[in-house]
Every structure is written in structure tokens, then in C-alpha cells.
Amino acid sequence: MKYDLDHLKAFWRAAASPAPLLIVGGGRWGRVWAGVAAAARGSGEGIAIVSRQHSDDLEQWRAQNPALKDVAISDCLPGGIDAIGQPNIAIIASRPRDHVRDSIATLNIGAHTLVEKPMSDTTDAARELLKLAESKERLIGVGTEFSYLTVLHYLGQTSLEDDSKIGNIRILWADPLNESRHGAAKRSHPEIGLLEDILPHAYSLIRTLLPTASLRIVSANESETGNDMTLTDETNRKILVECTKTAEGRQRLLQIETDGPLLQLDFASAQPFVEQGTQKLQVPRDYLSLDSTLRLELGAFLLATENPSNPCPLVSAAAPLLDLQDELRHYRRVLGN
Image 1 (tube, rainbow, N blue to C red):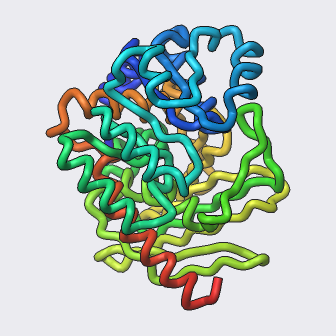
Image 2: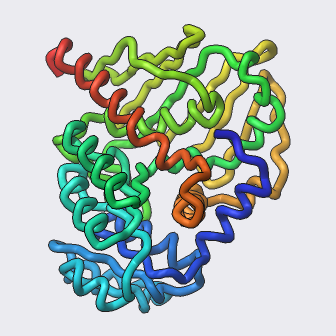
């Protein structure tokens, strides 16, 4: 879905809401989310982290970050609710195998629930989760933060406004071995393969440019020498995704064939830049200043809960991503991965 600047600014402002926010999971991603929310609202008031395993570490982390001194920490859901009041929104930032369990708990207390990607390591259980959310008239979304990469929306309003001019796409995604981000080492989980982990990111980038594309996976390979998958859509457009966790440096590169020179978007840093052929394109400062995809994601989900009839990529991505996750696992089984 392509957003204009006014919509993106509205998401940014909405993230400053002081409404009670419950974060389930006290690892790296739970802490990242607490930091994003606290920065948006100006303090940690109204934010609670529920963690069954990391409470001592969390206390130390909070003490080292004065801006987060008001974030509540609890080892159970009732304790988190006691600290901040009844939350309208919960973010699930636990490990993938626990996402369904934790989402059921937050839906049962009446909270709209945003689940870090992937929604689950078990697609059947995740589909039951979608049914539960519907029965409780709560929204459930999946964390596809690059649905809110503002430079991509700028391109969608200008150079790439016409979908028919978008040709084949290549996504390069590389991390160094044992990379540390946001103050902690990035961890992988054995229940989720690398391509499965990157799939929601690729999906969000593609669907921002091509909002109506019907995607399917036509090949996938995971090995020590490389990881790649190819998707296609109803126009037979080819989308190649290549990723690794053993690179020399961090890389986030989106290459788009157009009816002119190749367009490249490099978003490995907080200030993305765009090149078309040999020319660097100037992106307006108003777009570049909205430099936190997670803050925009939070604000978009908050606004979606206020008006559920409005389309929200975080919500609409959930079911299609489960279908693609099944397709990817099919190729992994065929290849014996």
C-alpha cells in the first residue's frame, strides 16, 4: 500500500499516544519496542514489559537507560496490567515458537495484538489465532515494518507511481556474523529458517510497490553457500531475494528494473538513498525525517485499532504471509533443508 506524506506524518504522530502498551517478551526485540514507544511518547510511562525469563537483566537494562526509567517490568501478564492499566494494544516480541501462546493470552484480555514476524513457527496454529482474533473482534497484525519505509513511499508517489513500469525486482539482505544491533547480539531461532525470517520483510517491500500483487514462491534454496528464493506475481514479474548472515558488512538493497535505468534503494542505514543509473535522486527532507519504521508501524497499528474498517498492511499481510510460509517450507522439504 502506497501512502502519501500526510498519512505517514499521521502515523508518526499517533505513536506518541500515552495509551497503555503491553510488550510481551523481554529479549532484544522487546527492549527495542519499549525504546521506540518511549521515545515517541517522551517517557516510559504507560509501557510494561512482561518477561518470564529476563526480569533481572531487564532491571539492569532499565537502570542503564534513564529515558526508560518509568517502563514497568513484570514476570506475568496480570502484573503488567496492574502496572499500566488495561491495555488496548499488545506487542508480542517473544521467540517465534511462543508467539501463538502469548498472542492468545493478550487477545483473551481484550488487547489488539501486533506480533513480531514471523507470526508463528506453526502456520496451522497461526491460522487458528487469526480466527480467535476475529471472534473477539480484535485486530491482529504481523510486524512488517518495511511497509513504512518512507523513501519507498516517496518513490511510489513519484518515479514508481505506475505499477506497469515496475519490472523485475531484486532484494539483497546481508548481515555480518554475530552482528550486534540495538545494544545486543542478534539471535537466530532454530524453529525458523533464514529465508522464513526474511520473507515478511521482502513481502512488505514488494506489496508497498505493488499493493495488489498476488505473490507465490517458485523456488527457494538454503545452504551454507547461499540463501535465495524467487517469487512471482500474476504478471510473471520475477522477484529475487538473496540473503546471508555471514557477510562482511550489513546490506539492505532493493533493485528495481524500470522502463529506464535500474533504480536502486539502499536502506542499510538510518538515511536511505536512491540511485537511478548513475544519478542520485534527491529525496525530500520531510520523508527522510520520519526515520523510524518501527515508530511508524506502531502509529499505524494504533490508528487501525481506532478505525478497523480502514485497510492496514500489518493486518492484511497476516494470512497471505502464512500461505507463503507454507510454500517456502514445501521447497525446504523438497530440498531436504
